[in-house]
Image 1 (tube, rainbow, N blue to C red):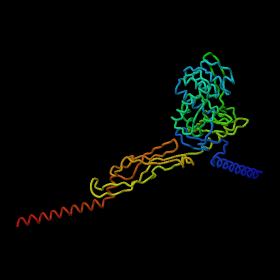
Image 2 (tube, one colour; image 1 turned 180 degrees about the horizontal axis):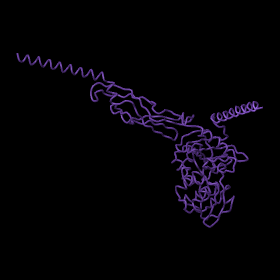
Image 3 (tube, helix red, strand yellow; image 1 turned 135 degrees about the vertical axis):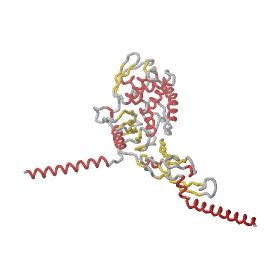
Length: 428
């Protein structure tokens, strides 16, 4: 009986070990996710480097993720306690709007900039975005078309300042317009700048909020990002916040930021499949982010690697004599890293600049130049070093110096001999 139990125990142990080993292997064997989003990208929130991409430059409609740019402009031009006025064009906005979905608001009602910002980002209120537009252009009585036309100038100026080349905005809230478009990559840069703003980040991570007017109207609202609610099956405790979006033309969109063990990644999914439960964009995001966190930097060069060799000319006697050349190895003293993927491999460029081209000025353990690695939107610089020094040059030319010294001695001896003969002849 005891033997039987030992055999059963051994079998269970082996089975459990194999099972654990299989799970560990599965966790390590990461492959790119199969997401429904038409376009997507994940970037390092600190550097902006691309980690994962799918059709990142394809033209897409951003829907309400547009409100991240509107929020950026608001925080630049207004302080949180500044008072804004509810506008006629805000009143004319469709759902999702506080005026339509929650409680009628009257043009002329006063609301703080902070309340307006929070309501726009948490509830994705279209009327709050339109209200911001009217107040920032300085005219709260214009119709929707004229308000949007004037505010789009501010939006596209901001787009230019951010260096976005494939984006043009026409509305403050992302309601569909053929001339209102972007790309997943451009939205990631907007997200990066927006989430770096404390007011905006605090808003998108807020689960529940109470909208208040200066006249005492109060409307409870809730965040539409399902990743931040711990009672949701989609809950991700590492999601700091995000901005959702939807129109029939844009599909489901999501821009979100995550923090896992101090490493922050921003994800963008555009035009995810629309499902009845409104979950697919969140599932696409989670799959992409999980994969992105499994990707680590790759060494383009390791510390002490020679990244290039330069041929430099010099004179062994510094200012005179023949000219020689020497191959100077250029090394980095720390790892040169990047995220290895098709986009970065295709677009990355490297360059070298030297502080001097005179080998006699080279010194060991002192930077002699810079190695520059450029990726899309990212420039990294590394100090260059070399093993060549003046003492090494002197060793390399030891025979030349020795021969020169011998030659000089011979010349001096010859001159001395001739001088001695000359003195003897004069004596005779």
